[in-house]
Length: 302
Image (cartoon, rainbow, N blue to C red; front, top):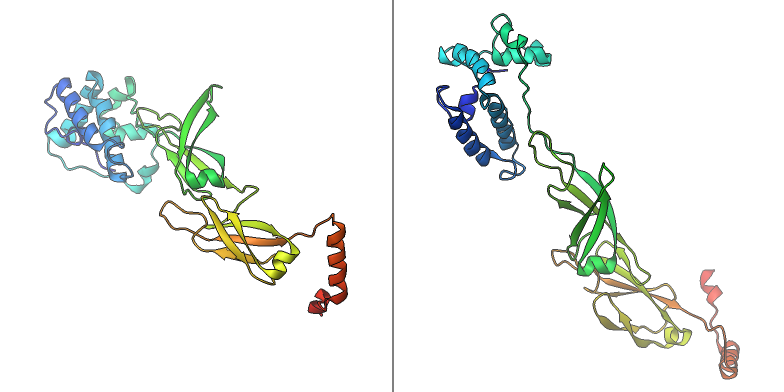
């Protein structure tokens, strides 16, 4: 570990500066390296911590005087910075102050005084939650309100804009809406996991949408055209002659569409429905068909 030159960290060449000079230097450096300006930049984040640490020490006349003793010893006298050995990496808090403010013999008067507390900015913890939306809301997008309880029992309400085409289990991040930061650190984020629920009409399978349509036995046997309701439009499909119950009819590019504009298919499953209540004429026709038809559905299973 190397002795930290707090003046150099703040962009100052000497310790012969006023508290106002230090304040101005801190303001300029903090603005340049603030995490909100340099998002996801670990180097800037560490630099900002050093800047905050330097200001904590140099902004108070008493702690500045104590620090200047070590600064004059290591920097003012143009002594080379020294490094602590690996065994000091696990130093106790008391040793930490020895490292930064001089050796133990030289700085005993500092430790007898009120100890300097260095407060490093810490980002607050993220909060994670989940909300459920329908396929339709996910397809078209929607704004939803969610309420979360605070530690003190209060309730915070957030308006969350669900972008159209969001994917199942995709996350939405609300910057700075998590737990509060410490020592001037920025707040954590609110991370919302999106759970897309199937509806009675549609089931989501990747980018494909699955639905079903009921057809009569004669429609399945003879073929017919019928209209199917898609998620954003109606489409006419053909039921081929001899369609079996459970067969799928695929309609290209009528499925779910993601945020990039990629779109899946609409898969329509045909369900043959037998009428329960027959008219006399219908019963006669089915009876006649039973007598004349040579079709044996059980033969296909042998």
